[in-house]
Length: 294
Image (tube, rainbow, N blue to C red; front, side, top):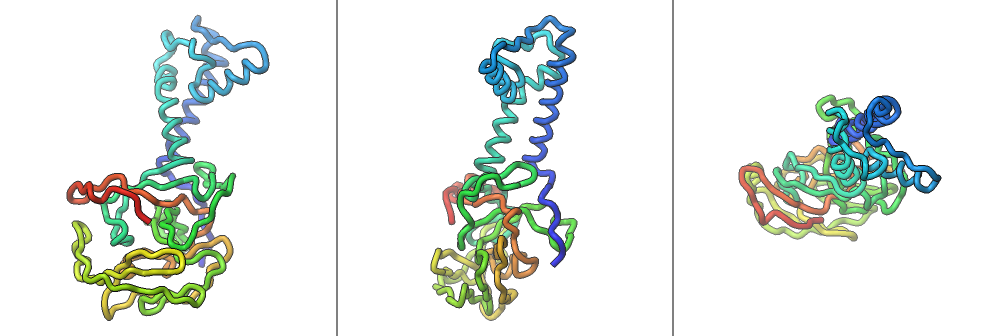
C-alpha cells in the first residue's frame, strides 16, 4: 500500500473558504487604508468590551456595526458586504453541520440509487476543521453498519479518483477480523445471517441489475439489504483492520470498488455519516425515494 496523499481537494467548502478569505482581506485593506480617504463612517468603539463586540461583528458582517453604510464605497467593497454573510452561513453549515452529496453510481444499491441526493451529518463523528479535515473535537466513532462518506484515500495515485468523495458501508472497525468469502461475511469469527428477499428489479440507471438476488444481511449491530448474483462471486478477502482505519464495502457487492480492492479508510479522511435522501433525479423525479435510511 502506497503512502497516503493529503486530504485537500478543490471541493465546494474549500472554494467557499478561499472566497471568504478574499473578501475578508479586501475589507481589512479597505478599513486600514482606503477608508481614510473617504468620508463614510468607519466608527470603531472605545473600550475593551465594545471593541471585542465590534471585532466579532466584523468577522460575521465585515463591518464594525450595523450603522455603517454601503453608500459611497467602491463596488467591490459593497459586493463583499452584501455576499459575505450569506457565503459565511453556507460555509458554516456545510463545514460543521450538514453537507449535501449526489450519488453518482450503483455501488450502494439497493440502499441508494444513482440520482439520489443525500445529506451527510458532519458533526456526529466529531468537529473537523474545513479544508484540512483535522479533528478538533471527538464525539462518536463510526460503527459497523454506518453509511460513511469519506475522501478517497487514493493509495495508488489514481488521478481520476484524486479528491473524490466516496460513500460505502462500514463493515469493520479498528481491530476487527474481517472475512468475506463466497458472498458470506464473517466479523470476528461470527457469520452474518442472510434472508433471501427474491429477485431484484432495477430502477432507471440501475435497470441492468434486474435479475440480481436481493438479500438481507444481518450482523450483531444492524441488518440491511445487499445485491449479489447467484453462482457468481465478488472479491474475497481475509484481513484485520488496523488502528485508526475502517473497512468498508458497497451494498452492491459485485459492483463496488471498496476496501477489498484499494484498502482501508483512514480516520482522518472521514467526512460524515449519510442519513437522509432529500431529492432524487435520475431519468425522472421520484418523491417516494425521500426519507431517512441506514
